[in-house]
Image (cartoon, rainbow, N blue to C red; front, top):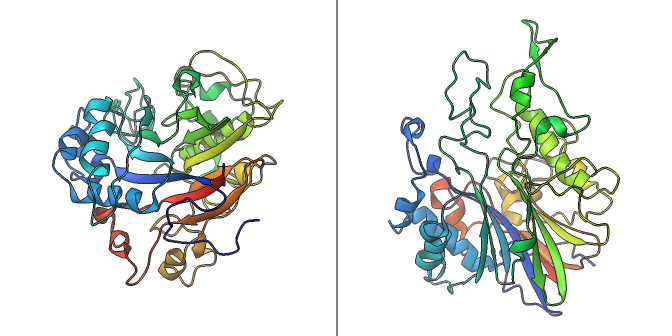
Length: 387
């Protein structure tokens, strides 16, 4: 039975019966958190390797939160895609393996990252501003350099990387019944001209970053970690191209879990189909979507209401106190007052506890919640699964 009130600050995650703590955390470790807006368009590669060498205060804050919550498995969104020796290995060695503000160091023997579409140049004028710039909005996923806003999974349990499936290159046009944005007239009514030409769509990937199915071995059980970070349903025009892409990125996982609806899917190795109906899974990530809010109606509901998914609705007192006049604020996962980060287990997994790390007032760790530069504008979401 799921408790009616969840612990907002988290403990060791080793309750009785023995549990495994799984979490997602948008760590905001991309260039926009370290450089000025004027510097970003000039970048050709990630500045994160250099920043990781600086004992950076914001990254120490991220590490402190990980040391406090102590997840056994965690997806980090907005951790640039880099070679491990200059990226995640340095983060582990220089930050997680070092006590932050008196917290116990933490180690993850297993890590996984893979390429993403953000910052990968396209040869097209994707936003129809008359300029073909390659980067920024004209990348296949918005970014100023390849790998910006990437993803990393850290685990204390073996990651079955040889069985990983990625969907970085699945083409949007190959999703049956996909959304099609159209050019709008002066009255903001759709014309019959698609926003993206057939030539563009022949190369346009659905995933703005990537979609991963990464199995993890926990004892004698395999759990599939389904990780993604769909595009925000914003920063476009009345054609709502990002809103439509966000919906369809979320739909990819909904169809992946639905036998009969998964026939069109192919991964980056060409293997077709979705996840077997008897497989266990946890969906992880910043989905940039809240139920009943923004984008295209029903986007995140595709997962929250999926018959294979158990939405335990992790919550915190911090979210409630941050937005006391907003209904449902106890479920918020971002400082900008929305629930957009999710840990959604399959129905067969027994959930012991869940929460959002958001300490308040004079609680220990509350100083990390004060501003983005102290840690992130997102909060870690976690749940404990009975092993």
